Every structure is written in C-alpha cells, then in structure tokens.
Image (cartoon, rainbow, N blue to C red; front, side, top):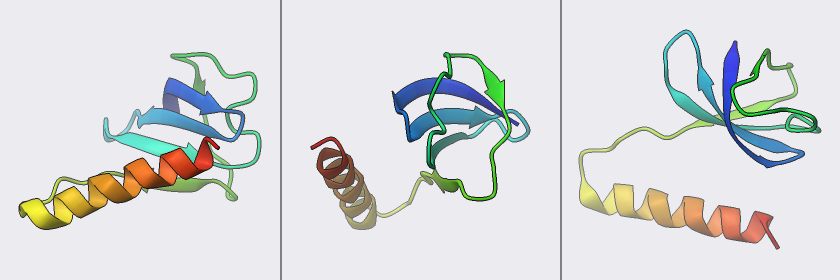
Length: 77
C-alpha cells in the first residue's frame, strides 16, 4: 500500500510505500486522477514503479540526477 506524497499529474504521483517507508515515483494511466495528498491506495499491475537509490560514487549519482531531471523536463512539455 502506498501513501500519496505529491501528485505530479493524472498519470504520475510520488508516493511512500507504507511497508518499507521508501519514496517511489509511480507512473500509470490515471494513477493520479482524483488522488489527494496523504490518501492511501494500492497499485495495479500496469503501474510502473521507480525508486531512487543512493550511490556511493559521485559520477554515477550525478549522471542519475541529470537523467531524472531531463526525463521530467521532457515529460512536462
């Protein structure tokens, strides 16, 4: 079960998994539609789930942050 932390749009939310207390980006058709912050919900099987993990080396971490930033910029256009 997930708890909504931030609604990105109708097809994306940032949510916290209540079992492991980790933050995830959930993308799927209409997953954010009608959701409110702090609302709890279950994900469907067609939902894509992403979790950012911390890396020890600076270069891969920098690459990862740049990739995520560019990904979200392209999604918001």
